[in-house]
Length: 69
Image 1 (cartoon, rainbow, N blue to C red):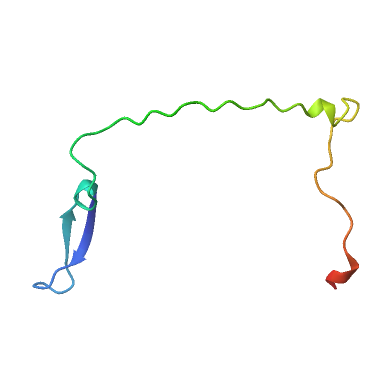
Image 2: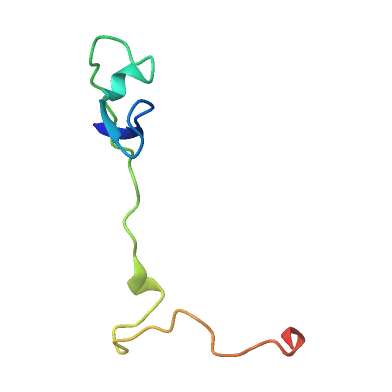
């Protein structure tokens, strides 16, 4: 990663500064692999709520509250 800073000696010029992200944060020397367990989840069973007769399902209402005016 590099970034540019204004050169204080030569106005109008910029200097390239090389930067390693590890220098910014205390990340330790070793690279440790983090293991994540897969959490169980329940499959969605949408057929319980919607029949297969209608291909499209309305996800929002089409009415407005009169108090919004």
